[in-house]
Image 1 (cartoon, helix red, strand yellow):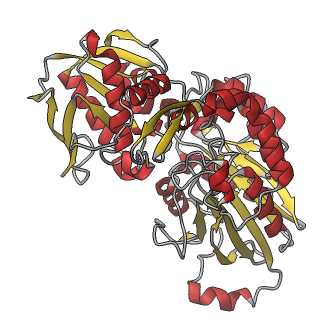
Image 2 (cartoon, one colour; image 1 turned 180 degrees about the vertical axis):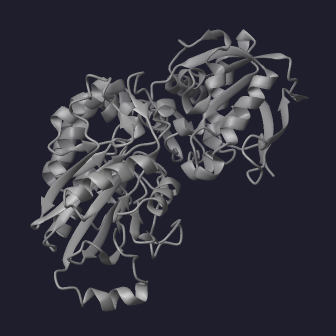
Image 3 (spheres, one colour; image 1 turned 90 degrees about the vertical axis):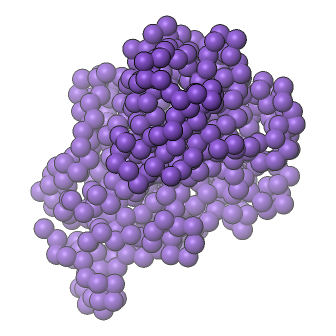
Length: 518
């Protein structure tokens, strides 16, 4: 077992005393979500004019340059990913894992963990992606032995060499991936702490004393894993889109966040930042120094011309769809993850209103949209179909069904049960209102539920519209799986939203107090 990490003040003294120091630069990304092209300040598409004006961030072409620059000034560097490269733009909808693999190979990744969105299209697309990449894909906390597409290829951990030293890497994915995505019935997920410790013990027995966990499990889970395991040096995180920084006032914690002797890092999402952690080990594999800061991928970083050209080539089949102007919006429509997963947001109201309007003539009273399905904001001005599909990329269809008021209350409690974790199950609504008290215990956070201006009746049957993902139990909504008179094959939610904005153009986003916080 490694000795306890010394205080920050003592680290610098100790660093100079080690006899065989080894320094490693860990470059990392997470939750990229197919943002190969530059993004706006709202994390959505950023047009060529704005990009030329220096108002865009990210994009694979800038990452090529940024990574090359770091590799040029360090002897030992690795590039790893914390999961969720899949899903989020038309590039993924059209190319699935093919383009992701090509771009990750170009960037020269050394390892990646499986994110929940890597299972959005089942084991088939994940397996195809794995066969196309030049680096290991890892997942420790799942049993894939019964899934023939993954059984012989998806490892729990691996060992790579850099600068003459062995580095162990372990993958970690959300324990509730079966609720968040479509892994199929043959993949069984398990507790992250036990899974990581089991792999650490195996690696340690092999003589590996520098161990990195690639974790798509959220900042909160990463802190727990760091606290409850031994032998983990670094956790490179994802899933919660957490910005850690020592200079940015919006950061949720320091970079790195030290838990005992483990350094925990994460770099927001969408390629807006490139994490850069510099770790020094002594000859026993103990960390003597861990420091760094995410690099903002802004206009000061030049785009690699060859990569720009390749992405433009791959974008050609998508142009007609993307550039179709469907509406105008008078103001930005807010789909910020941090807002929509904790309270009423204007994008949530738009989507829920659109759903309800589409099926109101069927006697539907209530619309429910999980905030995890809301993936971006939309800037003021023209709204293209590409904008809409960036907000709603999952190709979900409208689902209508009937449940009692008691089941609705159970669903609302599930919605608020992980609000402190920023979970995507938080419901945006139309046709109803409710209050949520995040300070109360999970299961007793919802009150003041009104439907059509009247109090919710537990025995009354209500007709509801949601999306097929939620209706079939996604995000923990198992109570809807047995709903009466369910129909999951309505129009695509993105088309419904686009038609609603068009019919209400210029659309003016709003909130009206349908969700209140206590």
